[in-house]
Length: 44
Image (cartoon, rainbow, N blue to C red; front, side, top):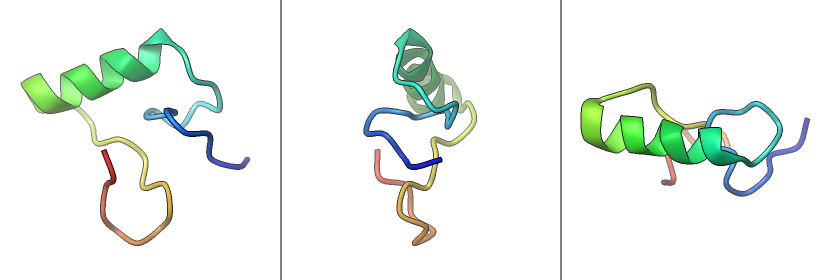
């Protein structure tokens, strides 16, 4: 499945759950977003 910009949780769609995923990552040390280009660095 190709990556879609904004799909932080890698479920294949961009929706409100991606925003929640990023908020959890930034503010409460939640799971990391997808590595979109496979370089080992998160681009969020």
